[in-house]
Every structure is written in structure tokens, then in C-alpha cells.
Amino acid sequence: MSHTRYDPARPRLQRSELAVPGSNPGMFAKALESEADYVFLDLEDAVAPADKEQARINVIAGLLEHDWKATGKTICVRVNGIDTHYYYRDMVDVVEQAGHKLDVVLVPKVGVASDVYLTDALLTQIETARGIAHRIAIDVLIETALGMANVETIAQSSRRLEAMHFGVADYAASLRARTVSIGGLNPDYPGDQWHAGLCRMIVACRAYGLRPIDGPFGDFKDPDAFIAAAKRGAALGIEGKWAIHPTQIALANQVFTPPAAEVDRAKRILVALEQAAREGKGAAQLDGRMIDAASARMAENVVRMAAAIGSKV
Image (tube, rainbow, N blue to C red):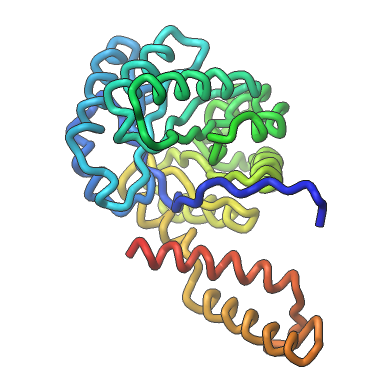
């Protein structure tokens, strides 16, 4: 193991991440009552330009009126990109008026580390001026070729940074990729055309202590395809996926919750290795397979996730 280590970000459950348009405040209460781990009130792509200012007012009211923390949810606001004139008002108005109720700011289309630095600097100033006691976290969307090219430096850009999200739709547009649907597979490609991008983002996240989260799947009437996409991400190390429709929440929770049999086997691995250590052995056998210290690290990840889910329930 290298002597260079990066501490993991504050742990949060992000199995399911419900996107809620800020222009539709009638959906806020339903989001609060949902089984989503994480809710983000959206000021960006889900809101038409003519509705931006009213959506900002709605989001501030929604943060103040509802007790998001009582439900165990992480509450987030996706602001507009720093290349728009909406960004600074999103940051100043939302954080000044409702920052004490806010857990995370999600910044879209991050391309370079300084995009995150700007957000961090604004949050620091507003928190100090307003006496906000907790440190608001930052999540970023990697959804452009520039962002993917700089993903490693972005991952190191701020101590507030907790997670990276893969924004497949804008990423496809940025690459000029031919795609069938948001997050869907192109039958002309022999496999998963998003695999390389997801892998690169996941490696950057794990190297620097962040959580990798997969983004939207547009066809909410195709649960099987959603589950297949989520499983591909989970196999690579993704911790959760967006739900752009309430029906996708349960599907994401299902995929990113370790099955009982997997948790049981992980616990048995740890017990077997503890017994082997007492006997002076560095490895052991379980169910006809060799297990060692690497097995223990994998098993600890499963047990830790199961415990976090159990504490929420």
C-alpha cells in the first residue's frame, strides 16, 4: 500500500438519487415521502430558462418548509453551470437563505478543478457571513469531454468534494456519440459504450476518496433496462444511480443493496480469516475457495454498506 493516502469523504447512502424539478414544487412533498436516499432539487436542465428565477424561489421555500433531515435523506440543490448568469444567484440566494437546511450543492458540467474552487470559495464566504454551522458538501457532474479529460485533478480540487456523478446525456452530446436514449445502449456498439468513461471516473473517485454515482436512465417505462444498466455500474464500483421517475427509486435501492446471501458470506469470510490469523495463517479456505487479506477488504465493504442501510431502516 502506498504511503500516500486520501481519506474517504463523509459517508452517505446514495443508492437512489431522485431528481426533482425546482419549477414543480408540488413534487417536493412526494420526494420527501419517497424511499430515495438522496434528493436533489434541480435548477438546471429540468427548468426552462423562463422559469429559472421562480424555480429558485420554490427551492428556497422547499428547503425551509420541509424537514428533509428527519427522513434520513441527503438534500441537495443542483445549481446552474458556472458558465451561466444564473449560477451566482443560485449560490448566493439559496445558500444565504436556506444553507442551514442544505447538505450538498451539485455543480453540473464541471470541466476543470477551478470550477470546483469557485464553488468552494463562495460556500466558504457565505457560510462564514451567515454563521452556517455545518460545512455544505459539493458533488460534481462529469458530463463533458473536458471534465473527463481532467477527472483526476477535479477529484483533488476541494475538501468539500464528496461524489462524482456520470452525466451520460451531456457526455454523449459532448463526444458527439450516437446514442439511442439517455443511458441506453447503441446496438451498433459491441458492448457498453459508457464503460470506458464510467471506469475512468470510478478510478478517480476511489483514488481520492470520493463516491462514484451513475446518472440518469431516460426510459423510465423500461425497468429491466434500468436494472441492467445499474448492475453494470455496480459491478464496476458505482454506489448508486439517479431516479428521474419515482418508479426507478425501488429499482436502484434493490440493485445497490447487497443481497442477504452476499452479506452473510462476507461476514463468514471475516470470521474465517480471523480464525486463520489466530492460527498464524495468512489465508484460509471457505466453501472450497481460497480467501486472504484482499478477500477481507472486499468483505468489509459489503458489511459496511449493509450496516449503513440497516441503520437508516
